[in-house]
Length: 184
Image (cartoon, rainbow, N blue to C red):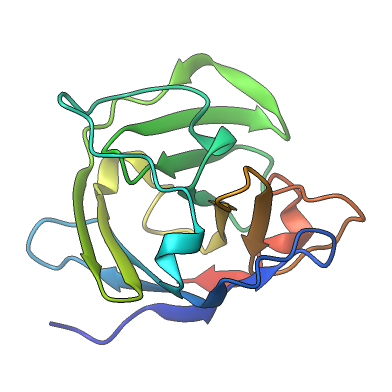
């Protein structure tokens, strides 16, 4: 396996702490055999103090995943307004959206994506491996801006917002200044 393209710690938004979370890390690895990327989210926390959606009987595309615990990625060319958003729920549901500009859905709206998701839960650890095929990523010849983030729901229903950076007073994962990861 080649070395990771990137590995980053996510930070809680100052206004939405989650004391049960010890750390949240995301690693991006290339997939030389099939193209695309593997995203590995590793959450270390007192999991019993969090609300994790149970596994779905038939996981598939779903909207509104951000209303509960989910992991997210925003990917766009380093220069340009268009980008894609990916959401992954512990239930196995996922979402993929195309945007032409911040918060403006492209005409296609949803991306044709069937990601491979592998969830593992251990004592104090929840790990997601999500594969994004090359076809849903910006051109391989263009540097990428990457926003990695997560929404963590606590057992009392509060939401905590985690990202590489929080450039605005309110949590906003679509804010490009928070997309601090750069990939070749």
